[in-house]
Image 1: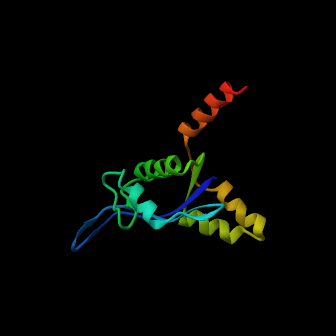
Image 2: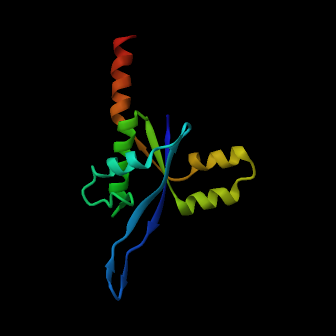
Image 3: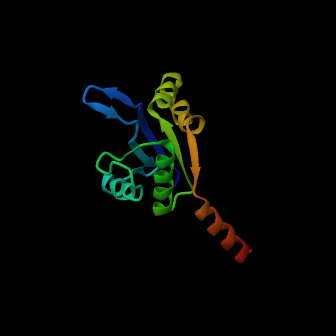
Length: 129
């Protein structure tokens, strides 16, 4: 089960009320089987110290990637593809059919690989070969 995470990036800004830090907010996280439960996402975000657990948002891309890896490990996924809302929208505009739409997730974003799962499969593969 491969995961796809769609996130929205909000840059930091200085307002009259004070400084608002940048944020990487998880918009959707899903697999071929459907969306992951919001309660699971909030619980997994608690593994990242500076995350906003209620909104499932992070201060930087490294924290978002660490969260994505943690979710991969929890659900046993080999990888998760991180796609920004902007890249997703560009892909949607260019998609002419269902195949083009599905290709968005293969062409855009960053891939976070669950090395732990790959090592387990490699070890078991050696054992049973």
